[in-house]
Length: 182
Image (cartoon, rainbow, N blue to C red; front, side, top):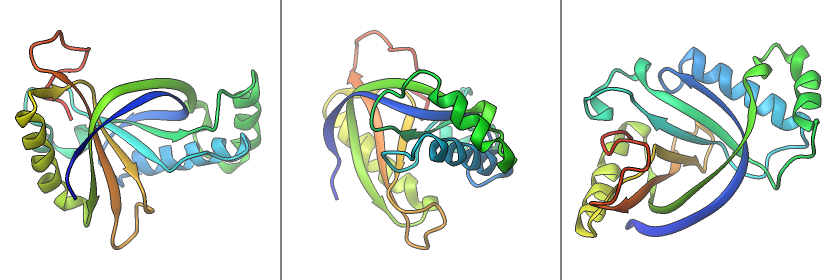
């Protein structure tokens, strides 16, 4: 598949933030908490998503994975009624998940380059290179954290993940995230 340029407006999600390698204890605990709270809110409207970045001068893929930062997201069908998050946390508390870390947030990424990656996560770097070339050809640079939408479960032997990178035209003011972050 080839990358494409797409635009995303406002989305409301339940989210949890953390740091550590994908599939590590911190990451898995955050996923458990996110799903426990989402279930108490009536379920999520979309698949699990992740925003990934590093706070390091090195390219993201050269930074040890335990230093990767992330926001995990489950999109909601709409803005939840006041108090729903708190009630869902209380219902989920007996699960033992760290439910107090889960928040409701809204985001709008705007213009993005997107590509469906099919295959092991360890091979994502190949798809990211294709996306980087696509951006360079069009005079675009990164404008926010690298975004992944997990089309299949994380433990699927043949994973499919939508890779999304918010972008802006080169030469315009940085939107708050360094171009080196993914």
